[in-house]
Amino acid sequence: MRQEQELHAIRNQLGLLFGLNFTENQDSSLIKNLQNAATELGLSSDLSAIKSWLSKKSFTPEESNTLAKHLTIGETYFFREKAALKLFSEKIIPDLINKSFKEGKPIKIWSAGCSSGEEPYSLAILLKEANLNQKNLNISILATDLNVNALNKASKGIYSAWSFRETSAEIKAKYFTQQNKHYLINKEIRDMVDFRQLNLATADFPSAENQTDQIDVIFCRNVLMYFWPETAKTIAAKFYQALNPYGWLITSQVELIDEYFSVFCRENYANGIFYQKKEKPVALSVNNIVQSALDAKPNRLAKPAKKQADRKVELKRKSLDSSASLSTTQKIKPKSDSRPSPEQLYKSASYAACIESCQEQLKMQHDNKQLRLLLVKSLANTGQLNQAAEEAEKLMKADAINPEFLNIFANILMELEEWEKAKIYLTKSLYINPDLLATHFNIGYVYQKLGKAKQAEKHFQNLLKDLETMEDDAVVSEMDNMTAGRLKELTLMMAGL
Image (spheres, helix red, strand yellow):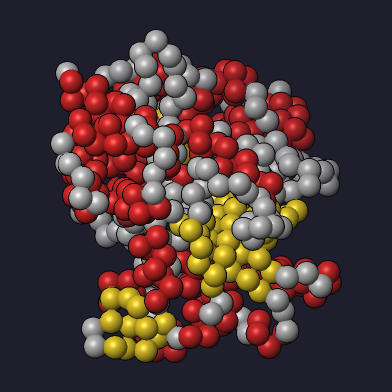
């Protein structure tokens, strides 16, 4: 009991110091890392002594840096997450070039939580490959991290072969020089990046003083998931302020947490979802909400009498825009006039018009499942979830064994927080088609929300067994083309493994 109380106090204090959120299932590694930090500083490694040490009002730079080193050990590599880099190289860079020419302003990029430097150097290489230096453009890349040791490694630019597992031999030969078993990044790339220590949880930004203002692109991947929810929300809001109009925030695909980024507009590119700051933010599409933010296990750091916001992680569930053909649905009869069809209206995101068109045609074609499916999705996309649920029930009365209908209805019910009802339809879907990975994940999540940890773990473990048979880069089609490796990472996180 005493150790639990001490760990509770330690976790809360680390939250205050660094904004980091450590859950109970991380206690063993947390104790080990704190003991290593204390030993390195010549302090007692006894847990009570560590608690007293962390409770003091101020820390020396050495103490802070040593704690950060042991608590924020990140693993990364060059050219990580292809969808994000595809967006950056194919869309963002050309747009920034045009903007810079027209307005004569510098291009500013920020890698927030840069760890040992692979991310900002990857961005620098992509910019170099675009020949921006020949266009006389003013480009700056700011790279920040809490961990001074990681920043020191990044500044040196020396990496082992493990950092190049997603790097082509051509790029490796062009921008790195081999030194025994390690590789030194070329000076021209190293000089493009400015490394600085910055604590996102406590730093004053945006600020011209630390170069965090008027940013065009912020990369902050696999960082916010480690913060307390309220801290992450604050950081996301400050990112929005730091960005120029139409600037981009690039997060990891497991950090698509709408509660944090509600002021941003969601943009889809290369099977990924990213956030953009627009002058007039549009309402968040419920088509994306239905794929939506998942609540991980309740935060046990909070006092029992108080309710803490759950940490949110987004799973890209089976998309309502699935391109899979439905053998049981009829094609929509062509209209005799030149008005766009419901399918055309839906594809152009004209959801209100699509609803009207579907309702009109359903008066004559009330058994047309494809029309009703479009109506369900359009109602969901305009936030009319109760009406969408009513129409989805009609779909299942017409075809009660269609897994797609069952999953769409279950997703809507999950958004309505009707967990018991969602469980019923997910169970039916799983019985009809036990091979759908999305259904395994969703039903595990629903059991978590119902407080049935054993049932949730069973489904997560079954999902992990299936994923073990797949290559990490294999695409899981029913998960909106999420990779098996990313789904495995997210499942482990949700299961607390």
